[in-house]
Amino acid sequence: MTRPRFLLEVPGLGSVGIGAELVLDGEEGRHAAAVRRIRPGERIDVTDGAGRVATCEVVGAERDRLALTVIGVATVDPPRLRFVLVQALAKGGRDEAAVEAATEVGVDAVVPWQAARSVVVWAGERGERSRRRWEATARAAAKQSRRAHLPEIRPTVDGAGLARLVRAATMTLVLHEDATEPLTGVVLPEEGEVLLVVGPEGGLDPAEFDLLGAAGGRAVRLGSEVLRTSTAGPAAVVALAVRSGRW
Image (tube, rainbow, N blue to C red; front, side, top):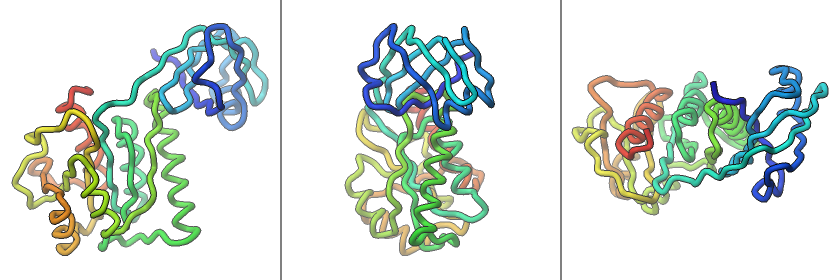
């Protein structure tokens, strides 16, 4: 069984060596000590979320913190080919569910998309709160799946903003039920960023679909089934992970 992993986002973790002493406190420390009830003698991993992982032995435990001694360190390099999920805002928490599952299967970044047919609207403080919730969801999913890199939750875009991202990306694949090209047949680049665009429950607005196509997006389909917006993105990330050799 893999060791529990916790986030220790402190300056200098990249220079920590064997024998160093660390303290896991704050929310992560409370979860480790009070919820997980980790005790002295046990081993855990801590990561800065940017690829640095330290294996530690617990040498002390209080109500809301652990004292640690580093017994091993490793650096996990980021992939040369990055998968970026462009997730349309959706009602019922389906967009957040997509972020959670996509993080677990290895997505590298997520872009919230205010699509033309999105029922949910992110505006002002509500939009910022929702974005922070996506970040918290991605953090929790990254820990659960023992990831060394936290996926980046990028700024929200509208249709015009997304078109600009498409023009700058190495490749953009737009999931669409009417597409004829299968996702599993796409030849992936060796490096760069591949955008995976997933629309809202009501589907892509035709004008928006044309805009993405004009910017360089390719319409692809996963299979004969039509998936919900909460599952289409994670399923596509898995398919590309297999194609790229990550899985």
